[in-house]
Image (cartoon, rainbow, N blue to C red; front, side):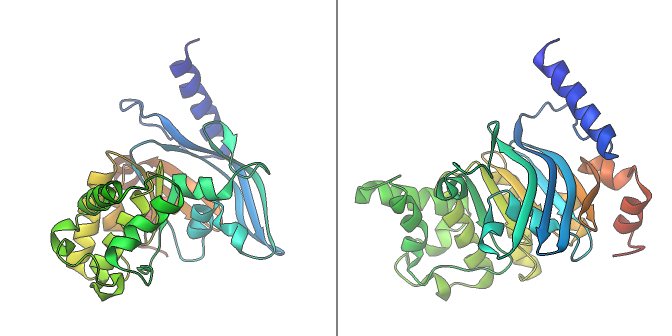
Length: 281
């Protein structure tokens, strides 16, 4: 049995075991980026995630949808161990990158968070210049040292974030002086400057106006050529526009996970159909 057939059968078996439809679009053949198996999480006595199983594929946008409080952001934070910063959190199960569980004791959390960047709901630029917002982390990770290399990296990151033309003449002004949409793109530039494999976005456009939202959505479509993107959104139209795959969360479980076209045109579960069509949530 070759590896592709084995992967298809494993995906099918996992999907059947968890009650989800087969999650991979076989015509596309994407490589695996993150594999999550039997992931559960508790905040103290409250269980927020229940046996989550999902495969996230490289250089795609995966959207996480579902009602408020259903575990989407909690799950997102599991991918780069940001839940470690919260007291009384307990985790079971595996979150694998390159076959290694990110929760294993020997995992370097700083190195993990360089590989798995984060863009938050509210733009949070550092209280530094636009230039330093982008250059600071790569310098701390020893990715660049010479001034010329820093200049090149800052320009490339700002270009990739669609911000260079707007800020190239004011790189030494505070990042906080930018508009909300520009600040969010600066945060994206900051995330991609350290050359991550995965970018996590927790409702990145919910605080933005429609024009800035459209700009970020266009940017996500361009960035997925280089990075794997996992985004939380409450906007069904946005998920349909930007995502290649969509996972529907409800009460800490993944009820359905499929390629987005199938999810929105022919959902396999009544709960997913009711949520997508606005009957609840």
